[in-house]
Length: 117
Image 1 (cartoon, one colour):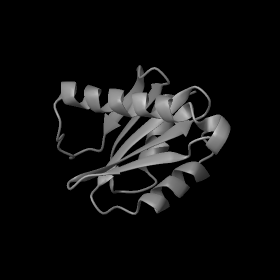
Image 2 (spheres, helix red, strand yellow):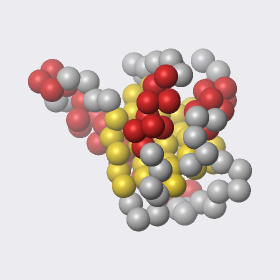
Image 3 (spheres, rainbow, N blue to C red):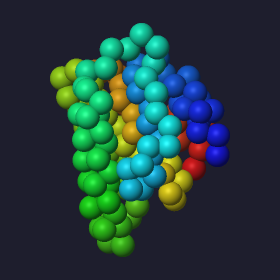
Image 4 (cartoon, rainbow, N blue to C red):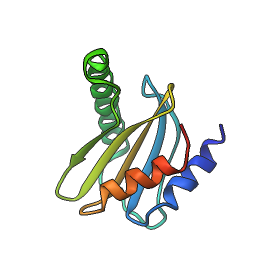
């Protein structure tokens, strides 16, 4: 997979996307980048911790898949940003942050429409 190309396709789906990170199911970052001109709200260590929490939460929810089905996405809404975590194929997770108030369903559907899985 060309992860930089995937990053660019995702960033081009909506101007409210601030950050795209692609990682493996263990949280190892494969590719990550911020939209040009976007100010980081978290330090690098805080960003890594946030990613780690999202990955661990995804793993925990995955244990329920036999009963409730595969997770589609997780949305965390904060005052300043929204964080969307979703599966990217069988081996990767997609972690995005958007501006507060972004149309998260529109973004999720556009990303799904890219056929990246």
